[in-house]
Structures are given as C-alpha cells and as structure tokens.
Image 1 (cartoon, rainbow, N blue to C red):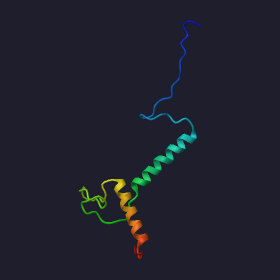
Image 2: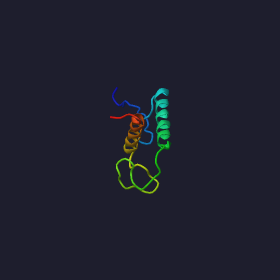
Image 3: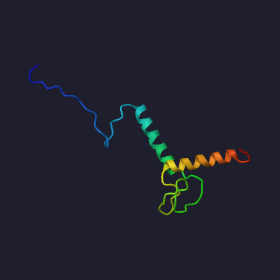
Image 4: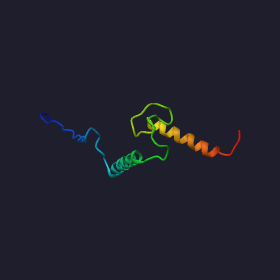
Length: 90
C-alpha cells in the first residue's frame, strides 16, 4: 500500500466552538443559549439605581443597581432572609 495516504476527516469548527455531534448535543446547546439570554434579560425587582452597588457600595455608572451578578444575588439573599425573619425576635 505504498503511496496511499490515509486521510482522517476532521469535523469543521464552528466559530471557535466544537462541532455538535448529534441532535441531543444541539438541543442541549440551544437550551443553554436560551437560558443564558433569559437570565441576562431578567430585571430583578429591587431598589432604584442610586450610583452605588446596593450590596457592597462600589460606585457604579448611572442606571446600574449592582456591580456584579454576585452582588445582586447577595442582595437578594439578604432581602429574603430579612423577610423570613420579620416579626421574630432574636
């Protein structure tokens, strides 16, 4: 078999991502993309923007209430705990 070169087919890359192999992989990827979009589009209820993060106090641009998703989650956690403890004395 001299002279024959074995060619290995490689899957094309899609915009820097690996190629999805089957329908389940594609569906999983689609769900993940939609979930990410929904999370980022969600407007949290809470206080109006005041120029500083409501959780850690870091200065922010106009219109922002928290400096990061972590601070937003922390603020929400504190609010939930306060609501649960209303009326209870230590």
